[in-house]
Image (cartoon, rainbow, N blue to C red; front, top):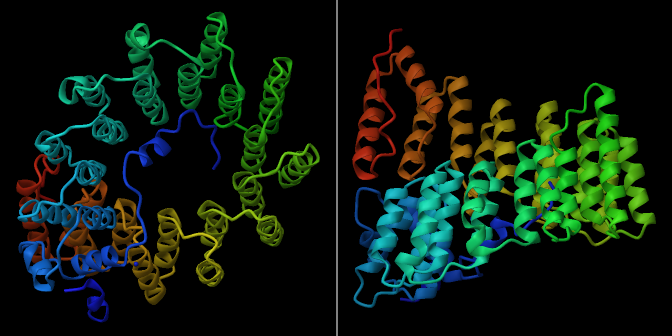
Length: 506
């Protein structure tokens, strides 16, 4: 049966980069492509899949046959629905013509690891016939993001033994870069010191480590590694200096006024050192300083610096404009921010979701639901960019606080239809907000939906809901939630073991 026939039956800040582990990660997975068939299949599953029945009931009913490409594209559309994705994977594995490929495994492993179902992810890796380095890199990033750095290093060590592939310096850089990006620079340095004889050192590796020290506020260690780098005869480049400049500016305290001036003087020293080495500051260099002006709420200085950039022939990027717009918004100068936004668009630079978020955050601070809704509708109509998950979470928080039930429902449904979420933060925002308003039944519905989609609730969410239900004499509802948690603990391994349910005295 052609999938198109089903259509009528189916209810969518700038940081200097080293090697960018996130961008490298994107190259490890297939990208979402326009596919009407994949859209329709994912909608069938999202609307009709019953977690207590087999996947066949949804798919065999419509006589759907999967190619490898269709399966992968459907899995990519289920990135926020780990349980449904896992059920689809097992269903595909049972078909006479098995459409699974290495990319299918990689997509599902990433989906499961993102919600910390590492036992299930490892089980899939062991099932793979042809294990590739990319699979381990996906897992390594998710382990590090969960704070499991030792397990990540062990997974890196397992690459050669389990895949038969020689680990190259690019994979080594990826490990160090990911550790540093998540703030585990001490682990990265430990790994570097043990392996530098095996992989060698270059400007990229030193830049990664300098970035790591600066990220955790250890600017003096960043300078020490820069001196070590130069002492080894390795020339720093503009990226290295931007990392150092970022360390000077990003985490510096700007209040009282003397600290702001000290930060700007230190930034100018880095500019001077760059020029002494024959390295001209680029747009990222200026964007970092603009971010300092934004944090210090210096709108006039921000506008002057932007003007200076243009006079030097340096074209501002979307990140540059966003820093200035953020500064103007935070200072209450919405009209000036809107004018600069218009200038950016007229210059041919498309805004990012972060640019819009500057306005949405200001509207949230003002509790201006009408202004936020007006911009949100304009954002969708102009189609300059798609709202990000963070955009939706800001709007959910705002409209939930204002108790705008219909608007809240519209934003939630739009987020789901566009495939942007929800994620753990979305559910947490909704549950906490509904608990504050004592809308317990709605909070319970989101709590159950979150669990069924494979998201592990934060302990604070669990405790807020627990206390509220007990104090509201909704013991029967609480028992049903408790039973649901126990079922999930059996199904998905050890993730729920820390949720000890203790008696609560009212």
